[in-house]
Image 1 (cartoon, rainbow, N blue to C red):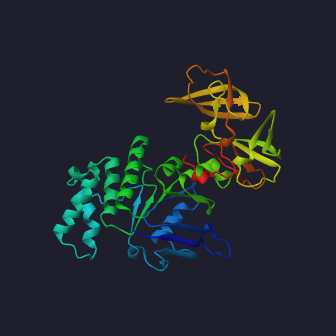
Image 2: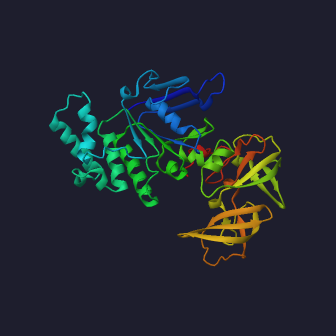
Image 3: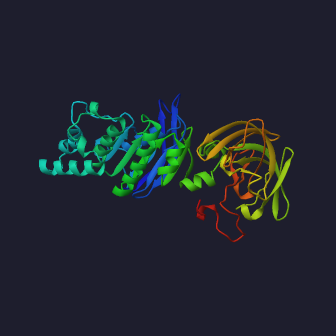
Length: 388
């Protein structure tokens, strides 16, 4: 296992003093031994460039990449002992699965005999449940089977680091869910420090021990999935993580003694100060409601705001539905149960508990209040220690 550190890492393509393009800027990431890091962000945010710098395929313009405290900036990719898995599988088409799996061991000067390599290939194939495919060639395999072989080729070397560059992008939705579960279980089993690139926030939330959210080459937040979802550092993280998108409205905030008073268009409510970790001094705020935190008022009473909406579209998703509606606040999206009697043009009353309301500074877009699972007293734990 390897302790991975990125210290003040910057990557500029082109001449930094003239027209260079800054792909990654002053990146600080610390990944302890055995952790699963996911680099998450939109296209062009710098996540793949970061992965390539970890793997030695790109040189940092500034800063240090360290493995177990040792700077590896000048160590060539082939000498870093990392294994990379790509979205295109990168299998040798003329080789069988057995030959693809054992290729890395055969070309390395590792002192392994042919029988030892054969045994290791069989062991990895059984782990990935592809032992019956060992004599097949890639053209005879499905997408999921090819991805398992690509994973096996990385695992068999027992590298210091696993690096995954959107490995599931070419798979269909059902197979993607299956494979991400298998990757998560596999990484936990072998215990090798891993970095995984994706733009899919559902993937990130499912498999990560720690998520690094990037935007425009800069780190927005580094934290556990619960931290990133419940206490996003800023508005960008809050909007990028979570599906459907967060509802966002303009508002003002005033100090009312034991509570903060939130005033929105034709709607006011209180947020107890026990729900806020630091004093709020700004006046203009952005108020966020996640769709899954909105309830039908007829089914659940809260101490928070209640407002009427006119339903436009109902999208069933199993036992729940995503309801798109219009209100005096603006457009509202809610994810609700007991939806079978809801039709377009119906009026729906929605409510949300104060502990689930997000507040952001309207100017800086920094988080003022995150989402708590339940209301807490002055001396109770913050969201970081509350199980989601």
